[in-house]
Length: 126
Image (cartoon, rainbow, N blue to C red):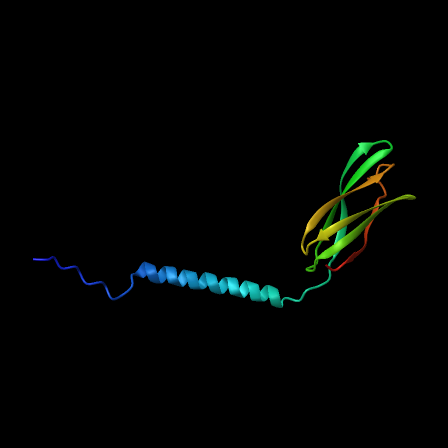
């Protein structure tokens, strides 16, 4: 006599419901984040150069400049200028993403720790 197989349970197991609910929650969370980022008002880049480190010695000083973009928009061809007395040095960053950070190096003949003035001269929108 052939053995009978037990009939399948008509209700899905509890673990199946829990995993389905977690999948739905994860999917909805990702969609909300994407929509919020897409609808968020974008502002212009806000470029902030700051002296990070100094290397070298008499006649050959290198100033490492940390450049932050605290704005939401991306900036391209960012020109950073450092003025130390009558000496001016510049560097250009190809790309600085929104909320991003990069480092440039400027060269000077005098120690840049005293009196270095930094500014972002300009940038373009990519």
